[in-house]
Image (cartoon, rainbow over the protein chains, first blue to last red):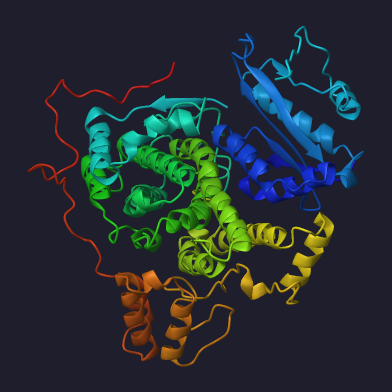
Length: 145
Length: 446
């Protein structure tokens, strides 16, 4: 595995996160990532993480511990946004990130972590399952408006 | 991670709230805006927060491995004296920044930026409260004859102009200063707090993590609006905040931020005593690197907006060429933000009053140097008493009319006026309460 350094996200990671997102989605969305990153920073700056190799941010994972949503009262570590630079994949970056995030959730009192994956995101689904997640006894429902 | 929450004893708690009524009248607005701007965030609490589970042995200095002090008398006299000085300075900065933000708060032109600053102000109030907790919850009589109430009084009496550090004695010229201040000066705060996480006085060390968590938002409250200003400047030739305007604010605040680390040649004593884990120059070097990264990121936002037709890779390559001095599609480095040389416009520390220009160039003529420096500072700032004082000192130093040491310690005659509460005949913020009527000081969480 490459020498991956995991640390909490800061406001100076926003541009690097935009870059990773742009490499994945093809769209530069600075406003979106500014809003998202500041949300996590102001609520719990220790929780969300970035991965660096060679001093460059190559991955990020944003999430936090919350409780009481969807009737799930217990404190839950929610894994909400993540991305790894396509050029840095298969090097253990994603696994290092999720391990750090889950360890942080545990320290904050969560005994369960949850996330949601769209059916078409097979790669993400496989990644999440490889890291110990299993289908949960909840059903995601939607209604087109 | 868990925190113990504590309130100050009633007289001190009320003194801080009383101070806020006069110096931070916007404070009640925070709870009204909270749900709109910070939905579901934990409500703001004016209380002291102490991190639990911190290391209980000294982490740096000559006494590594020995138990941390839990009372000032357990520290060496030198360490306790130094720590007391740090606490007073830190408290001064917290209350001082609120006074500065207050000056231009109503002139904000963006409600989100304004509300973010409002939260920053409230959290600075909490940080000041935290410092007062450290000063009043322990017996400092081994190193000072000043009573706790008088220490608090002295801190709450300070006005813009009489604070301990120069950065907190500058008036803001516009609300924009609130933003640039958060990006540059709060960043120094982050460094100081981080260095003090190892502090040999356990309650001080335990105070740092909760403050740092709040400080992380303060930095974002500076950097994100600056990023957005730069994008607006790239897209709109009549943007209210253009690049030269932002650049001049950087020229105003960056040198003061550098000076907050203390003289570049010092700081080893704090490390030796186990109070901080870095000496001044090392911390300042890291700060400069971090500011450089911040400026690069902000500039990328500008370049991306200007060259929106380019792919990410091409835009990054274009930025690299611009940074090396090339002109790419009409964009030159001098149209982007730059950090001044670390010796530019300095009045404290190793390069104090050396006539070093924005790009590190030396000057021999003091009038030429001052004209150069003024051209890199906001026009509205030129008229301040701070600049007037600097001009006077710079001239005197250049002509040998004042010793450098005296010029460095000289402060402008700013508001060393009226400290007491303005609303009554009271001359103190901390009011005596009848015996038995005191209270507070309790642990707030189970």
